[in-house]
Amino acid sequence: MNRTVRGVEAGRRVAPERLTVGRGVPAVLAAPAAIGFCFLLVPLLALLVRAPWRGLPGLLSDPVALTALRLSLLCATAATAVSIVLGVPLAWVLARARFPGLAVLRALVTVPLVLPPVVGGLALLLAFGRNGMVGRHLDAWFGLTLPFSTAGVVVAETFVAMPFLVVTVEGALRSADRELEEAAATLGAGRLTVFIRITLPLVAPSLLAGAVLCWARALGEFGATITFAGNNPGTTQTLPLAVYNALQTDPEPAIALSLVLLLAAAAVLVLLRDRWLRPVGAP
Image (cartoon, rainbow, N blue to C red; front, side):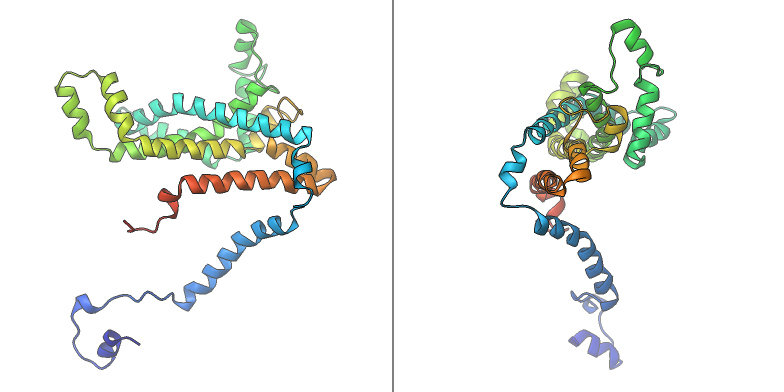
């Protein structure tokens, strides 16, 4: 028991600034915190313990696994690029523009964050399918069919991943110092010049973090992809879908492919360590 608490129990008057909160964790919080930590950690440990480490090189060099890995990297990178091109202007509109219905627009942009991915894939089919609202015109006018194609994988991953980038960049735009932008505008810089030379450098760290989150979400996408693009090896079968297929017959290849996704998740944590892993208040 520290000196401050003893002083309070003894009835002595103690200055408010001396009533400090201890650094220990109360037992009523420590127990559920420990259970929660174990709940999150044990499945990852089980994956590492059951991994076929000796046969891992052979399993990962399987042509099916390599094709799925290559397709996943390609589609996740393409989805991230599309998200940056479309999402950064959208984030700027949400952060800086003022017009009726802006709150509704912001809510709609974040819907894919909470929407079940399978429902998202079904919505994409109804919109961009061959008989969908937009898809029928794409097919009739340009001969472009998105469902069950590699382009469809990119569309599905962009749909579920772009909100992560939009939300991250919007927050950065809201907190960015606008005095620099106003100073550049008073010196004669156009709005596009201000956006490219002032605004984007100001939010560059958040843009990078949002892009990494977007890429990681796209890499692990499953539900919307299998619903909208299917599960065809070499064309639309990404790494999560290959894990699902392998799990039906032999768990060892599924575990090996899962390790690749786990490694990608760990890489994301390393890249974002300054944003997520640094304690609050740390310099």
